[in-house]
Image 1 (tube, rainbow, N blue to C red):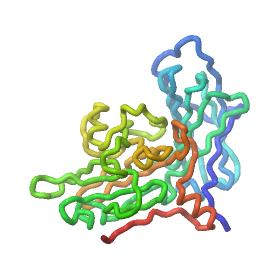
Image 2: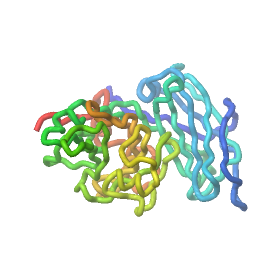
Image 3: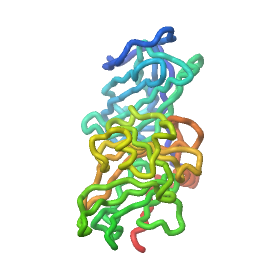
Image 4: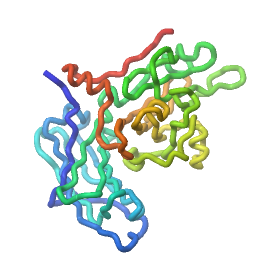
Length: 323
């Protein structure tokens, strides 16, 4: 039997089923076409593959040049009722070529991200569909082992580190012959003692401007690719340029990463769920977009596609734990 991700589908609907809580920071710039946009979340055949919780809450974000971001929440709703759907309506939503609707599903009890997706609102004549990508499947929720912390084997020689390739789902502590997109490096004092904090680096050459700091918070609020001028070779420089209060990696930080240092088409959006410490490597969830699409529309890593087509139960992250 083949096991695939089977993305959640959000499509146009007519009837609201939940009370929406949201805010619209500024008035819309006139003239702007606005609509009442209905959405259906279809859960047919999805619960065991996308969700690992029984009660979820949805967060949405509409962003673009026509208005300030429109954000809010919907739910809660159960994910354990099998086939079916739940519906909600977004009122007074601007539509246009550069407007993006993104939706995130979180565990209502813990706030743990479960899935993310986004779509353009350029054309809603045939309805709006969002395919949601999992943030809980093992290859998209990365929890590196002790080896990649400051105290692990990557710390031999005075530098704790890990390198990660998004499409290969592979972690290494040195480059060897594989290709990587992102590297984390432990910060140390003058005596090579761990400070318990980390910085990010470009994982392709170490100097490619491939990292853009988007902010700190829910992934749903950072759904697009920023301008090239926002990308830097390391996370500290990216955070400094963005005016962040601290330049070291922090829990909740969100980055956009150019794949293979920008030599490949596509990006990854990365949310750090744990910034790490002396004994623990940073951990993160992410989604990739391997096409020239400037937001995290649904896509799969190369490893996920390969393993799904081979009938494997799940995509997994492989670690290089020894020199």
